[in-house]
Image 1 (cartoon, rainbow over the protein chains, first blue to last red):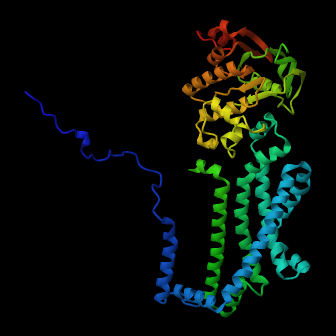
Image 2: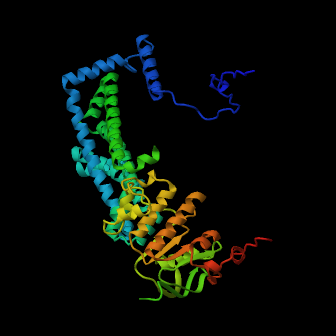
Image 3: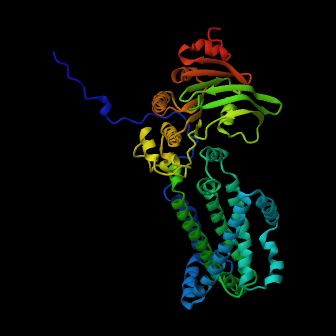
Length: 278
Length: 220
């Protein structure tokens, strides 16, 4: 008598084992989930404009904004304003970034530097950079220098704080290692301190670039005769909400693109970290 | 040729009012492997740091006779995460011998890896290569295998034994593991009340005896 074996049961498709635990985590992310919120908002805005629920004097419709953006580009107003604004933010960011970094290095690497600089910057930090505007107008007038100096001051403080914290926060175990392997002071700074402080420096850059846009927006709306902010300020006088929204979108693009570029550079420079974050 | 690699005379190190090391004497011969045992807080690491010359702001006195060619292995591998493996090995020395040292610890071909790409055992091998490349006359090791799993630790014991047999540095190995001490060392010393309380050859060392000297009654 022969026994015929049944087909192996395990090969049959089986229902997944029933989980008895209640899931508390939020689960898998929705694909492109981050775009949903903004899209929904634009959708509501479009519907409200189309049905007339939204008064154009409060906010123009999305298609009017797009049309205005196109018109402003065609007429040369936007192409004239963008480089002016970019130049202010870029120069302020550049000078502020250099100043903040140099001060942080001097303060972070020597006790004398720390004594002279750190306290001073902490005092400066307590005074918002925008609070210095009246004084700086008296000193520098309301020209380009004034705008660049205000942006640079703000960025310098941000860069200083991040870089100084990173430089002084080097793991003491690495300092001990440097002593054990007999590094010279210059080697210690080059191989241990600077690379160790680089993540903090990049954080400063990213916060600084965001700060430079913020200061730019404020400055261009008080005392400017050119630039994106000036365009928006004039639109305010004539009740042109479409032009204001175009200005906001341009500012938003500036901020988004500059952060994206810095992220890219950061990933290149800190490639040793990529394996940690996966 | 000197008759000793390390000589410590009447060493005192104090934290606050407490003399952690209190008139300690210890001599290690060239090529000798000494395991240092002691309860936690007994001053093992303090002694190691004193010999390594790393106790900057610690009060104390005594005579230390240590050559310049000292290498230290830490409990963590202490690799700089932003330097590739080869650069970590050659940190502070002229480049050139790092590859050979890496090959000797079994990591040939991993020169360009980042430390974070290696396993815990491999990282500790790199740390050993970093010691090796300095051709030390004295190797100070502060529980270098303490954070490794049991299997990896056995492999590392074999590697360390092999390296020591080939390069013959004097070794002072701080450990809390009695079996590790018996397994690796020529001589076992126990730190008690700030001095060397027990000093015996490893081949005559008895596990129970050592444990009771460390304050652990095995049978009781």
